[in-house]
Amino acid sequence: MEITTIVALTFIGGLVLGAGFALAIRRDHGAKHEPTRETIPPGADAVLSVLPSSVVLLDGAGSVLKATAPAYALGVMRGQELAVPEISRMVQQVARDGQVREDDLRVEAGSNLVHIHARVAPLTSRYVIVLIDERTQAERATELRRDFVANVSHELKTPAGAIAVLAEAIQAASHDPDAVAYFAARLNDESNRMTRLVEQIIDLSRLQHDVLDDDPVPVDVEQILADAAAAVHHAVEAKSISIETSCVPDLKVRGHPGQLESAVSNLLENAVAYSADGAVVRASATVTDENAHITVSDTGVGMSSDQTERIFERFYRVDPSRGRTTGGSGLGLSIVKHIAASHGGTVSAKSAPGAGSVFTITVPRLKNDTVDGSGPQL
Ligand code: ADP
Image (cartoon, rainbow, N blue to C red; front, top):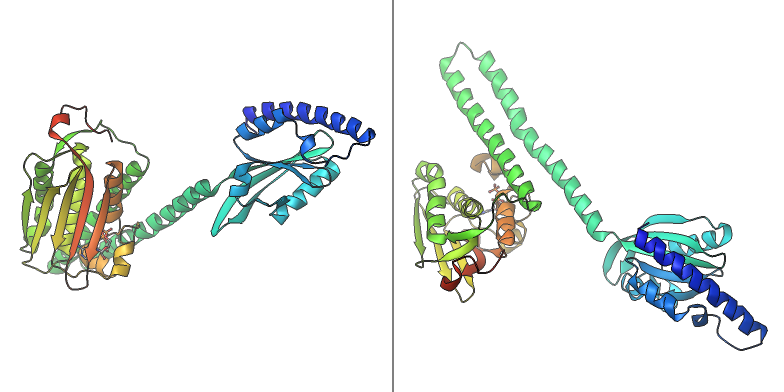
């Protein structure tokens, strides 16, 4: 239990005990008072409201004497009653034997399912206090981490397995130079794919933990487009695709040039991979009042709107079998999304099957008078 909570509870214990005596004396005098609110002295109210947890205070019979507003918001209280049967049961047990109890529970708050940690303790011999902490965010983070590790292991198994099979094939074909050359080329592809995957996983986890090596600097967007186009030249040449770039003059944003280039080259890589040979891919940058918009568009295979909604999820691929031909991992767009977010912006996609796709990164632009470094902070 946090130290502030312990101090606060000791204080409330004293107040409640004092108030209990006051109530007993008043009862002795035959006064007709409700046995509820009067057992909560004004000081206790104030102390309860500063506790970091949601709090419900009950008497030994299980009647609620006080519940803080967050306890209602979490769905633990309804009207004057505890709304979670498991907590009511814990209260009865604590009132009976004075032993502290705690449990992780799921409760419905409106239409949401909320994870909570409930701790129920005796407060003096007459009262029971329930402290509740929301764990939904923490649970979600744990779930995401679990999924991520499972997905990474699965994704790494595919090229690792292929490398082992190809190595065996080379061994078996050692007297056939053509076969050796063929399998060696495939081995090279798989090892590149694995290297790319590992690099992307490292990028993603660095971005997610906001571990950024350098401070943000003013970044020239036209340069980013040029560098990103240069970074994908192998893929472009292999498919005889041409990349056309255009940018409004002097457009700058504040950020990390390496990351921004990686975001745009990820979009260009996809545009090239999902376009037919000889197609044209466009990368352009425009401005509105506050923002820079970097758009990458292609006339390739496109996607349905259902698919467009999911493509920014990690490891999501519209057609997993395409991954083998495009060398895709399903991580590229989640990296783009994180980079856009870490620059205070967003990325969106518009697409239709057979009609190509348009991806737009929108980030705050640096106005000319703020280029000196006093402009918007990331
Ligand atoms: P991948 O490494 O598989 O390309 P991404 O995260 O970059 O992973 O993309 C996720 C999925 O979105 C891809 O598998 C592909 O199906 C779809 N996608 C991305 N960009 C395009 C595009 N320009 N045209 C068509 N489909 C695309």
